[in-house]
View 1 (cartoon, rainbow, N blue to C red):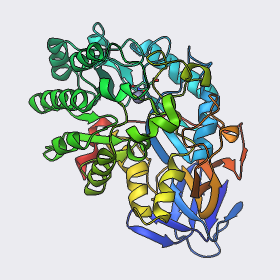
View 2 (view 1 turned 180 degrees about the horizontal axis):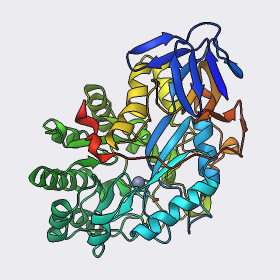
View 3 (view 1 turned 90 degrees about the horizontal axis):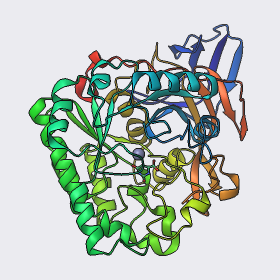
View 4 (view 1 turned 60 degrees about the vertical axis):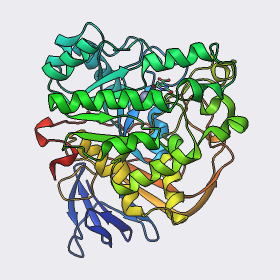
Length: 441
Ligand code: DOR
Ligand code: ZN
């Protein structure tokens, strides 16, 4: 089956160009092929932009064990709608992904259910160093340095030293300092309003833990990725990355701040917490300056009923995979950033950070994971039309210009103008850690 995508403006590694793209056997066979090339299907895409599919390297899809919130089918429908063709999922499912056996079970489950391509991190615990050392078929090791949802807290310095010294996979961490969070919790009597969340998980908690993690990575010369940076102060720590350190920012930390609690309450309660308007600005600045390399959503759905509980019972987390690309395309339309930057932050950079083979670019030999976007399309995010199982979005009521209209996974159209082809299945993402990560080129 040969497919030609014709007439679109393609965002190529060297920049946007009006060229046709030829697909065969799930891969990109040619860019700008000769006229009259024989094909089985032509996708006419005049007036649309063709981007590499979004690679969301930080999501929580709740399958197995927490499937009342989300499951691999609903989550990956949301991915397809949002232009996300590959995801990397975190280990805080039930059971936790903390052994190779569990990892392989999750890969098998995804092969049955996932409409897009998939990979799974292995979680560090206080007792699984041997598993972390021998694991394969994974992007890397996830450590919660500081507690969050789930039981994966690793806070013991000696153990952290051993994980950085004795393992070889890249490491990423959730950085919020447990001691600081505990002291703040006590000072605020546990907290009683959603706003208190940002005082309990404050700037100091984030900065202390991120510093501690970077120190470990540099001393052990171990590749390290800082998950969901939430403060401007942390971005100052990334100036001297020494070819080892990368960082990500999430849409909620770019777009929301403490002023939004009044309107949105627990819907914007996240770990790390949302911070100030000055932090929004600082995060944007760092992203544009390349001190933060990539965007990931931290898609973390909870039901409305769970979220409506009073603080601190309300769980942290919000869904985002189906709107993340549109949020950024809206910024392109508003003149805040370029389309090329969005493609770098959401497609190429995450694929490079995590050593994915054949992902993140429109180039010959790469996988035909692609998204056609209509930069002129205006649509309002509505809770009622969300396909995530939790059925709500913190962006409910927000009008955005620039939306995915067609998503292809390895050459198969999985989403087209609001309709899904649920027979499409993604495949396991291949990681080649010898590639050397983001700073390799
Ligand atoms: O807000 C969050 N929710 N932060 C995390 O680190 C975990 C996530 C979840 O799984 O709900
Ligand atoms: Zn997360």
